[in-house]
Length: 148
Figure 1 (cartoon, helix red, strand yellow):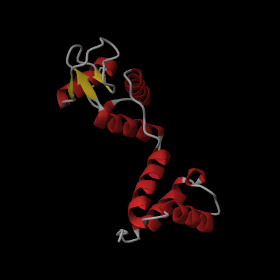
Figure 2 (cartoon, helix red, strand yellow):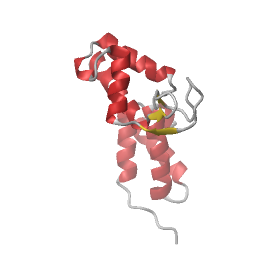
Figure 3 (spheres, helix red, strand yellow):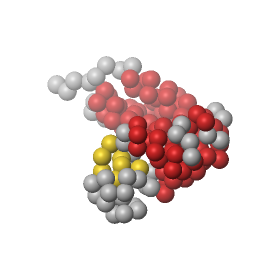
Figure 4 (cartoon, one colour):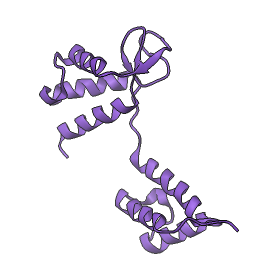
């Protein structure tokens, strides 16, 4: 993945959780606008998004921006409260929730046993993303456990 693709991905992922402050019309990612302190927020419209891009770079589409301009947009998102999700932590959380549902009683021991036997590591946190996907496949391949 190139730097440009990474920047574009960050921008478009960030937009999914973005809101617009009704007072200053700034795109934000927290419950209170860091610029004006406003608490009234609404969903981001296409017009809001294009206006935001134009204000920062003078362009209304990421398609026509240089990497430096894309970086400025990402930096503004961080300034306004954007915090990217750690994908590894998210995968571990999802695996544990699904394992609890599908493996039933003693799910933690069963999951730890699988990780130790297959991956030769003692906990999920030490696995890389490829290994976590294998554990996800194992967990998803088990029928949902029904308590009697």
